[in-house]
Image 1 (cartoon, chains in turn green, purple):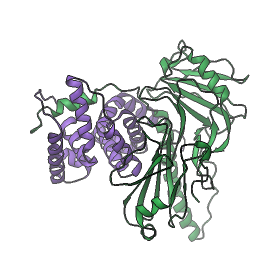
Image 2 (image 1 turned 45 degrees about the vertical axis):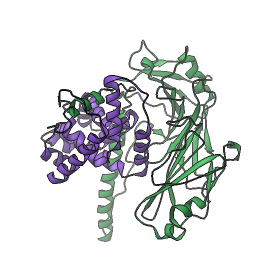
Image 3 (image 1 turned 90 degrees about the vertical axis):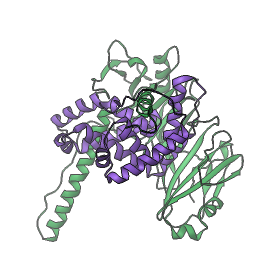
Image 4 (image 1 turned 60 degrees about the vertical axis):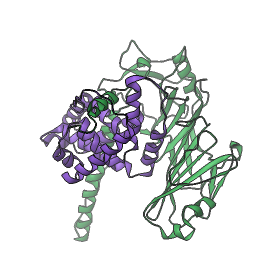
Amino acid sequence: MTGDIPTLAARLEELSRAPGPPMRLNITAAREVGRRRLRRRRFTVAGASAAVALALGLAVPSIGPFFTGPPMTMSTVALSTGPDLLVAHASFGWLPSGVDGVGYQAGAHSKQMLARGAGDLGTRIILSLYASSAEPVLKSFADGGDEIAVPAPPVDGRPAYWITHDADDPLNGGDTYLRWRTAQGPWAELHAYYLNVDDPQDVLLRVAAGVTIGDRAVPLPLRLSGLPSGFRVDEVQFWRPPLRGTGAWELQMFASVGGSRVTFAVGPPGSAPKLPKSKCEKAEGLTLCVLVEGGTSASLDAIGGPLGLLDRVTLLGRDERAWTTRVVE
Amino acid sequence: MAADPVRDAEFTEYVTAKALWLRKVAYLLCGDWHGADDLVQAAITKLYVNWHRAVRADNIDGYARTTLVNTFLAEQRSPWARWVVLRGAQDTAPARDGDVEATLDLRTALAALPPGQRATVVLRYFCDLSVAEAAQTLGCSPGNVKSQTARGIDTLRRMLQTRHAVSSPEGCEP
């Protein structure tokens, strides 16, 4: 069947066996998110039925709580509808030397705060929060194995434990979880891997002790003003260090206006992505590219399309003290 | 909605057994492991929602594969995913020798294909699906599969230094 490329099937098979990092699959999360979607789907049907009943003058019984289960993790970073675009709900404090920076991803594809080292095998420390002060229950890992709690030294006097497959291996083979109660009450969790230090337990306990809970607007290196009507930022991905390249960081911001999808990509030398067919400019030591795709938007056309958008972006330079939390004016 | 223990147990057992297979297909579609893991996560979440249909399907692996491919294609229509694909394609691998180099060449060539052509090539040559099966998976006509495959192969052939090897299409069997 491979016809003109007789080796293709074998080469695809070989490519699929290329070495990769440990698989990040969370079956528990898939079940939980799936259950929420099913619940919404049923609620929508129930809501429609209730609307019909109300229209017909029928009595509708009150609807009780839909879900009373253990506390769920909440995102540590989110897009805000207020003046500050990106808001973090917690902050890292001390971080080990293998970490080059902290990044934030907020939007439909991910909502996380991630402390990273450079490269595919650089340190990864992901911070999660639980929505309430109730202690989370143990569940199962992505591979179906049961989570086992192994007591850890207290974090500033508050209870803490490792979560592992094997009670004899608190570090879970390098794919390490530490859960503890924060000073503010809610439980938090660190998930760390590629942690290339001699004493990972001590390091993670120290990282946990430095975590603080509380809303904090995240400054970004650009300001947008005079935007077309209907303009909305849908997703922000701030990577530090960048996913690839040698720069210090990179930012992608995804927005929509009318039927058009708009991508802004910003970075210092070494990390600025070059988007094909985008319009780019350099200012204040940064490169900005704007790409407009999809359908048309009258309000976007009215300001001159991508070039008009470029004119409405002010780059704030490489000195982070000049960055702003009020990105969209 | 409370958890359904039977549904959860069946789903967990299935995904645990098939995770690595799904990841391989996802890696060929995405071109990078992190993207592949995100894709599998999104696909199995949809699979959980539609588990009642999946278990009634004649071929549950085919149902899971269809969910994965359609999730991939839907993601490609979002600007976020398009950016990730572009970045993946720009990721130049260090020079290596022999088969490893050829494998990395193929990854780059695959990443250069439009998502639809890439999915078609993976389904036909990695999953070893017939034209009709690939058309059913993608929800398009057999003629569309043929034309997408032809264009994809043509592009790959131009980009690759085709080397002699024995074909062994076995990859998409879980």
